[in-house]
Image 1 (cartoon, one colour):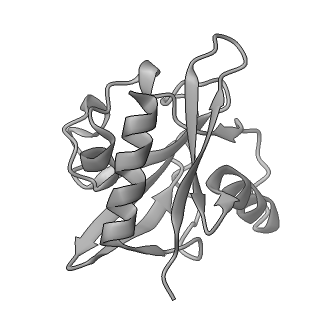
Image 2 (tube, rainbow, N blue to C red):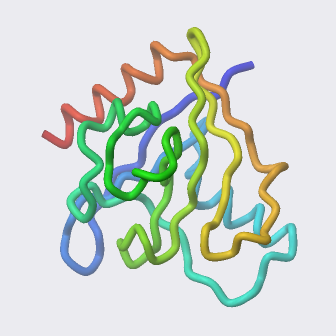
Amino acid sequence: MRNLLSFDIKRHDDDGAIVITPCVDGHRLSDAVTGFERDCGMTDPAGGYDGLVPAFFQCGALEPYFLGQSVAPYFAGKPGHISVLACECGELGCWPLNCAVRLTGDLVTWHRFEQPHRPKRDYSSFGPFVFNLEPYRQTLQALQAQLG
């Protein structure tokens, strides 16, 4: 069974910037990873997750970004990796959730999740999430069109 990607879109509380939160099978990824961390005892002081604020970082077009093919400056040293979540403050570098993106045939896989500020945390049992490529692309194209 493949996962389905969608996005929750809202306005950031502080400045009204658009926030896009990936949803996997209808569940906000921010809620899923927060629950995972809590269940695994990852309770050391930390930030909270929220969606990405495209206006705050230069990710370029969303389709290549979410396919792990972006040349976004945040990931110049880690090809094929993306941030799927940012901090609740809106700053990507403050408290991101990163993952590797693998494109294999007609599948896109999000795997090897990591919290770069807590490198000893083990996310190996979070995911992987596997999406069919065409619906994944269609979702990203619709999101890009909606954002303008």
